Amino acid sequence: MSKIYLIGDIHTVSAFRLAGITGVVSDGETVASTFESIVEGGDASILAITNELARGLEDRINKMAMTGALPVVIEIPGIDDEEGFSASALNYITEALGIAL
Image 1 (cartoon, rainbow, N blue to C red):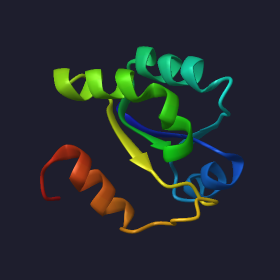
Image 2: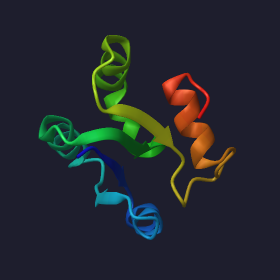
Image 3: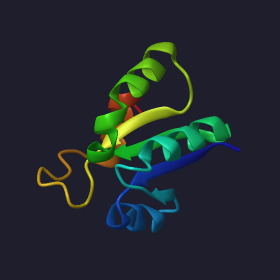
């Protein structure tokens, strides 16, 4: 069964867990190993990651996007991001997939 995962700070992960999304709390030191663990796990269809944590993984995320590899990686603002959410979660998913849901 495919799952939706989120990698982020404790506040963002806690908020998404309320919606039933599997969240993994990570920081700049552990994000690369956490990311690879989820990708290699094989059960993720969508992997959301906060913008702050995605900064060090741009090359890996872009490579996955270009090859069409699963999971689809979506960068989202974290709860503590100053910019905040400029769109709904559905809009972030739609933009990442390139289709209308």
